[in-house]
Each structure stands twice: as structure tokens, then as C-alpha cells.
Image (cartoon, rainbow, N blue to C red; front, side):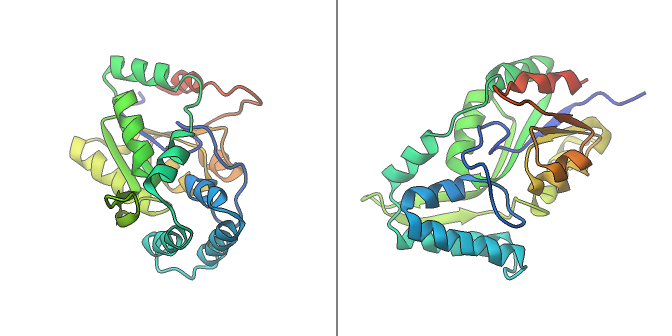
Length: 231
């Protein structure tokens, strides 16, 4: 008999929140990093695009080094706190996300968010949706004038996501069959392989080939469909 799901891991961008960028090059997934570069202008976007080539070609030691290179671009083109918050606030939830988490919380299922994105949006999601655990790759700190002062970086994307997943599984004493994952990007393949139930939500082909279930909606995505596969 299949174990009851007790813990669900979620990607953030493109999964809980609507995709802000439709396409991305190489071995990368659309993200708020590219959204910020787009708003900072064509030169910033071109440089950010070059970092994707370097990542795909294996020229970074790891995800943290890639983020550091991208932060250099943010500083160079004058990213400010107000500008950053405006861009982050423009990202909206998929339809049905709040209803889905309300039901999961009602069932007593624990939830965890693991994302290579920004802590600002993860904090919003964790508060709104009552998410149990949250790990995100980049947290920005600002000086009194709203200029970028410092940052905290965690390697929680691609293979790095798995380390955080296993940590939380161990903390709750759960085996993979008692856990599920919901994501959308090619960078989520690593997580989908580590749990008993994985769901590709309007996901990349690479993720759909790996996942237990695939949800494909042409228009008007409705996140509540995820609940059909949570037993």
C-alpha cells in the first residue's frame, strides 16, 4: 500500500507564482533574475544573458558564483530597494494557489518551498500560504539610501536543491515515499527524482519525462488540480 503523503516540496517561480519570463537559454530556467535584468535595461539583460552561457558551459564553480556574477550586474546598473520591491511585487500567484495551500494545511500536510530565486517573494508566499519551511537562494540587504549593501546566498537550485530537501526529510523522519514535489522547470528534475510522487505543473519537457504526473493547461492555469494527485 502506498504511503500517505505527509510533506510536499514546492518550487516557487513558475509554480506558485506565474512565469515572469517565458523563455530562457541553455541549461537555465525562466526566473526573476532575468526579470530584474529586463527592467534594468538592454545592456543589463545582455550581460545577464552572458552569465547563462557561462553556467551552461560549466564555467562557474557553483550556483553561488553564478549569483555573485549576476549581483555584479545589479550593482553596476543601479538596482535600488524601491526598484527591486516594485519588480518583486509585480509577480502574481497562479489561480488556485491560496485555495490549494488552505486545503493542504487543513489536512495537516507539511510544506516546504525550495527556490533559486529571491527571499523577498518567498517571505510573501510563506506568510500568505502558511508554508512550513522556506529556502531561497538570495536575500538582499539595503543601506539607508536604498542602495544594495550586502546579500545572503544559499546554493538551493539545480542539484543543490536536493541537499535542502533531504535535510527537511531527515528532520521530520520521513522517507521519500511519504514526500511529494511540485515544480515546473528543467532545474527541478533533480528534486522530482528524490520523492515518491512528483508533479510537473505546466512543466518543461525534461521535468515531465521525470515526474510521476504532468498537469498541462493551455490557458488559465488552475493550481488546485495538484490536489488530485495528493493522497
